Image (cartoon, rainbow, N blue to C red):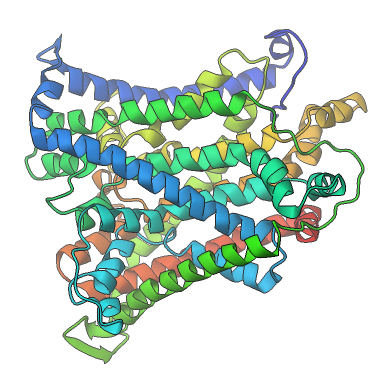
Amino acid sequence: MLPLRMTIGQPGSRMNRDPARFFLLMLVWGALGLFVLYPLARLLILVFYVDGTGSMGNLAKAFSSWYNRKALLNSLLLATAVAGFGTFLGFLFAFSVTRTTLPRGFKWFFGAVVVLPFVSPPFTSSIALTLALGPNGMLMNLLHLPDFNIYGFVGTWIAETLTFFPVAFLTLAAVLSAIDPNLEDAAMSLGSSRWRAFLTVTLPLSTPGVANAFLLLFGSSLTDFATPLVMGGHTFPVLTTQAYLQITGMYDLRGGAAISFVLLVPALLVFLLQRYWVKRRSWITVTGKSEGTSPSRGAGSAAEKVILAIISAMTLFILFLYSIILWSSLVRVWGVDNRLTLENYAYVFTVGWKAVKDTVLIAVTSTVIGTVTAIAIGTLACMREITGRKTLEFVSLLDYVLPGTVVGIAYLVAFNTGPLVLTGTMAIIVALCVFRYNATGIRAIVSSLQQIDPSLEEASLGLGASRFATFRRVTLPLIVPAVITGMRYLFVVSMTAISATIFLVSVKWSLLTVRILECVTELLFAQAAAFSVVLVLIVFIAIGVISLLFRLVYPETFRHARRS
């Protein structure tokens, strides 16, 4: 039996009378304890214990180097810049597809193109950007521009923004689509212009989504190592690349873990500030009152023209970059022998077929388990009578803010020896994907639940419906956009993850992203591009299947979205 958000009763009183909810809470805490807290505890022991005694020696040794201290500052600067500009771009794209008067075909096109960087391996954008804007790049030659050094902060910032701003788009699209257009109509009926209604109604009500998007992008940039590894170079070190190189190059597990562990402090501070800011205000927009729903009127013609110009330029740039990836997958040797061929795809479906099958199976399993987990955690986190609900939400997001290399090492250390040995199995990769990459689904569901008036559930219960029936017929249909967002994100990152999973692959289980990285390191760029194209096609097919399934199960929700 699934729980419902409740806002009445003394703490623990309803919990004691609902054994099913109590069992679910214990089950969730047990899973979080095993797959989040236990690996983290083993990691703490690895970093802070030397020869059986507590010691700060590993941290002191790691940051005695000025290069590592510079890497820390660079990490914070890069994460702030990516989160700020990425959230801005994500909001513009989300607003254009949910709240403007653009034709439906344009909205679909922008929404499809914007997720291209998101559904690609993390280093694909970096490779495409290098081929376009690097030394002797295609775009530089096309526009007859002098060469400039793309490597360093600027290149890393552009590549990470392109890679991660779709996360902001997916998060904000779910929040903006849930805002009732009647609220904007009410403001305009009182004399407000469209622009003023946007500033005083739409933008404030989307604040939870904006804050959540900023948090997710900050954490994504802070923990990314693939993009800085390709674009940063020696002039712009960040902590994740330093930790990765320390572990893989110097074989210093303790030193690498110590460097990466420092990233947890700023990530947790951002999370706590976001939580404090959002909870001070009320965001309820779904009240259940029987009112006609009018189409959204947007932000005014002038503002929509500016938004359209910005997103059109970004869309063309993204299409140009990914046309390079497609082109390179169809040539024999990029830059040397540009004759067209399908040999690279034959390589994917022969030599790389096992990686394709394993990755799809792991992604599907992680998405199904992760969606159920996200709904359970998100709903429990919104129950006021549950003691420790904020702690529950915090722990559920903890793995996300940790660097991927650290999570991968923590899982390797925790599950390589007893009491539970999972190393080399599919289970350890699925567990990592579920408990590390489920943050978007959890936060989207929490944001949507915060917008629902609790009187809707109370009315259903008062009419005699069971808690399960109320959740299935009232609550779940209202949070379908958030559930779809979480499912899409979890499937995509399960297909494209590498920073953590690279430590957990084995002979029995291979991943597409690892095969792509192997091709890149062996300078097989055409084969790497073919793997990337196949991966992107699989992800788009899966996204379409997810939407189709929910459209068949909840047709009324989608009809309401189209009317809005």
